[in-house]
Every structure is written in structure tokens, then in C-alpha cells.
Length: 177
Image (cartoon, rainbow, N blue to C red):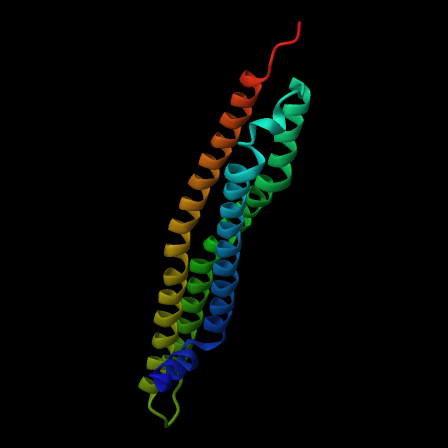
């Protein structure tokens, strides 16, 4: 198994290594953002926002200020990362396409070579590089796109819940008059 993996990494060329680094960075950022969103939800649900005593006796401005601060400090951390994750997910198939082009250049170079060596060897190396990098780019990008869509949806749900908690706190706030 290890020898097969080593062979694939060698056949994929330097672009495959770049794709692997891109994939590690992409999935690390996805995981960190997902855990960050879970932390925001936990903080929002457990202690910070549902504690009615925290908001009792506060004015409308103070309640809105508390919720806005929470939103800008915690939830915005997640929201700022979503576009960059989208860029990384979009870069993976493009890097795979770059590997395809690189592999095809090797293939055509093998076709054009009039040496004593078998041109099929160079052709097969080029086709192998093209197919491996294309596959790697798609294998990295497709699951990341689905995970990003889920992360965006969960961020929207969390934002809506935050707004709902704020409105509930504002309604519960006693009127002064």
C-alpha cells in the first residue's frame, strides 16, 4: 500500500504535491471554522444569551449593544472565513486542470521525440500525471464544496437564532415610561 501511494505521488508530479498542500490547508480551515461555529453556538445557547438575568434591568440600547458585540466578536469570525474557504475550494479543480495541462505537455513531448527510447513510456507518464492531478483536484474540491454549503447554512441558522434571541430579550425588557 505504501509503495502504491509513493508511486502515485511520484507520477502526479509537483502539481500533485501542491494540490495536497492546498487540500490540507482547505480542510484544516474548514474544520477550524466548523469548530469555531460550534463554539459560537455553545456560547450563545448555554451561557451568554439565554441568561435572562443578564439582560434584566438593562435598557434597549444596552441589550442591542451586547448582542451586536457578540455578533461582531464571535459570529463574524466565522463569516469572514467563508469566502476564503470558497476560494480554496475553487482553486483545487483549477490546480488539477494545471496538472492536466502539464501532463498533456509531457505526452505531446513524448510524441514529438524521435529518440531511440520508446515514446510510449513518456506518453504514459504524461497521461498518468494528467489523470492523477485531475482526479486529485476533483476529490479535494467536491467534498469541500458540500461542506462549505453546510457551513454557510449553519452560519445563517446561527445568525437567525442570534437575532431571535435579541428580539426576545428586547420584548422581555420592561417598558419605561
